[in-house]
Amino acid sequence: MKNLLLTPLLATCVCLITPLVSAQTAPTHSSRIQIKSTANQMAAGISAAEAALAPIELAIAQQVHTGVLRCELGASVTLTHDQKSPGYFNVQGKNFRYRMFPVATSTGAIRLEDQTAGAVWLQLSNKSMLMNQKMGQRMADECMSPAQLIVTQAMKDRPARGLLD
Image 1 (cartoon, rainbow, N blue to C red):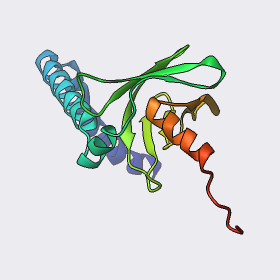
Image 2: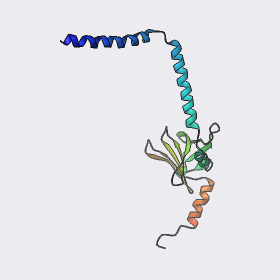
Image 3: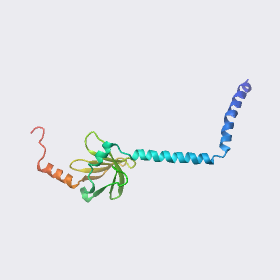
Image 4: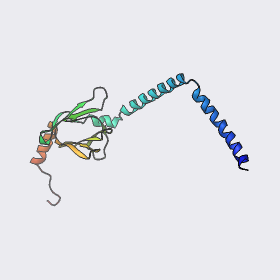
């Protein structure tokens, strides 16, 4: 009885496997080239789509302070526009280099990210900081452009009133 049940099952398996084996032994050189070419074109398209920024992100990029920003403990961070990709920035300092792009926030803070490295640049009105989320540490703090120095000095000269004043 078992043989009667297994024979049709075995015949079905042989019928299904035979085309696969013959397809694997047939020359596929040209189809491999086509698949590789298609894959490369798709990868290039995906990269271009990722590189293109939305109008809101381009508007944020115009507000980023660039140049050499002095930070606490004698450190410095250099932000430069990426000439090849509008809206992207190169952020570098001692022992690090990131390629960042703007991300919209609900708070109004300017945020740049390098998602691959896990680095985040936050720019507030009075200071900027660089954090590495993957390592869980702040890499640079109290970084200030000349415009941020003016805001910081104004905050010291005229502190905000307290809630109970």
